[in-house]
Length: 403
Image 1: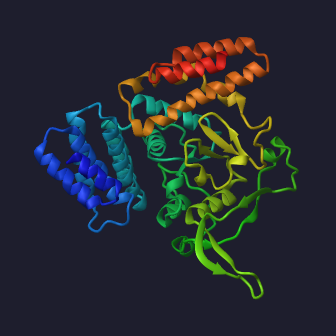
Image 2 (image 1 turned 90 degrees about the horizontal axis):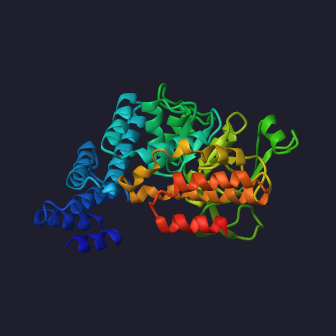
Image 3 (image 1 turned 180 degrees about the horizontal axis):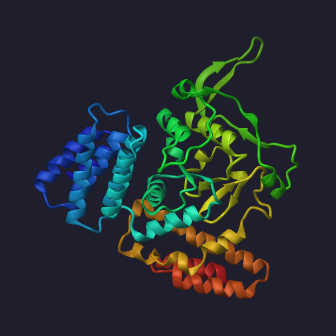
């Protein structure tokens, strides 16, 4: 019956999948997986499908109860903890909409207490945030890095100078308004030159590939050898397409209508209004299309990319080696071994970023004949990163570097 429910879920028949899993629960009341799937499927139906009639806090509590039961039956079911954190994060979003700092703090603490932010993930969140310059804006990729960073700010006062912005929420009018207004003691506001009426009217916009000029500070222009009179030029391409043929002006040949999604439009707006005054960073683990074509302007800073005003792809400025070195220090991997007992498969992938950074820095040392640094780096890798979580990959990376 579990297998039938999973097949229904794959085919987007969510209500049927949940009903089948409910029947499986009756037949196997001590099966942790059944409760996990019920929590996951209900969470997905509430947030990742179309709007759900009847969704309210009681429904959310039902999801948390399912996941809590799964965790109590199997404390090592890491993805149940992941979805528990995701559900708490969704309730935190409701708190943001209501500018309710008490519930915002409450739900992140609730997730932490349930194990949704294990030590290795807390350490990862700190390493990600510490890769950013002071007063930066950090665009995050998904639930794991967003919720971990928010917990760290709200409950450990870590890097409260940053504004954390999930790329997946910037197409929602309430969140755009929340970013503009901020919340004292919780979320640092950003510049956003939009009225309430404009924000509520966020939608797909008619758009053709267009070069946008964005002001940058004199300091960052000097750093990247951009003349002080020149702006940051970003070619913004449409990311939504219609079958409708359209000519914008009389006499023009009709072409396929293209549009700018709300997500890309708001990314453009946020960068346009803030880039001159604040550094802008992106988590390295987002879906690339969410970067909006900015990848050629990215400088690799470890677990994040820094947005620069010029295309530096495949140049000597592509990597900030001092930041890579600052990350690959033993003190930044104290809690990494905990992943072997507190794994959350849906959120664990980004730790392979540590291996990638090791390869990049080792290659740089080899190419620049910094033999002593390379030897020291290899020792750090063996002791701190190659912890046996994925032994085969650990060894493959080491062979790649030593050969």
